[in-house]
Length: 398
Ligand code: F3S
Image (cartoon, rainbow, N blue to C red; front, side, top):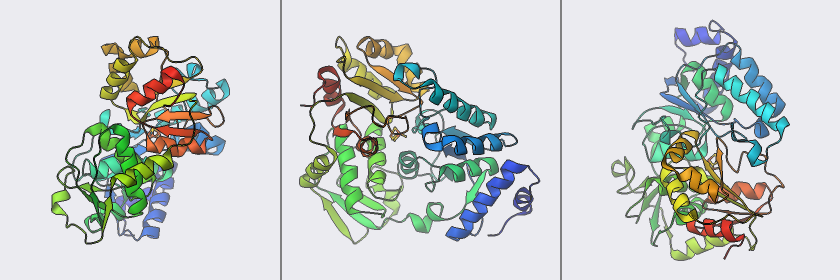
């Protein structure tokens, strides 16, 4: 890879250990993927924040980097393993909380915004069309590439952090226009109505367009919350972190419709639901907010929960960013949800919190949430926000 004098100086250690280590990571990555050079990034989103995933080795690595490294561009964090303020109420142990706090303090020393959300685009890290980024959480990467028209590969935690210290990333993959062309046409021939249908659609397309970039036709309208749900599921179940929806996402009109076509019929959606939903009726955990809830979704939850009570044997979480929670506080939604027995899980989510073995059956709006919760040994049910609220109140999935 060709390096500028300044990049070579960073690789030689002129800016300290963290930057040298970062350059080593970026150069190694660039050489593996055949990048010719590094390219400047406008922002970074770092995953690998939960102590549950990092362990002591990860914490030590971050601690060492934080001793002399400061990020060069706007850098935000993915969800951590716990709500940073309200962890006790969510049943997190003191030992875990202490370690998670050390992780967060290390990121803070690096100059990273302690945002802890997978929807950075809702809280101030909003890229523009064509900007280059180094983001790592898969739904956020897909949203940035597809809905915003920015350009990012799906970085690992270390390579995103390295890009933050250097302000650059190797120029390969989805940074190159020629690598962003769609390679399969997906004709959607069925109605997509409620939020979870977008999760089911993502599942169905992910399975049919595995490891490809879909060019999707047949969708007439889409709202932000629907697209963020779709981004999470399509990439979880198989596509590259980029899609085009004709008439909806930016840049779709510039692409040529691929000749290879697959279709999505109502039977495909039904089969997606059948695969995601387990045969279970007793629900002990309900979580809405994968990806993290927008303020609009929190409003809907509050309206549905007004004057109701979450069943005592069921835990109900609203997973969201701290900023969205702040707005919910001001609008009175928090009070309504908490009065009903619901809990806010800010800064964290059902996939990265240490939940293995704690719950038996999850109800959620999210296909991605179901995927990861199965790894945490839960049975899963996916449906609308209303169906999830009903499950929280009755402890049953009907
Ligand atoms: Fe976000 Fe966690 Fe879902 S990171 S997309 S809420 S699995």
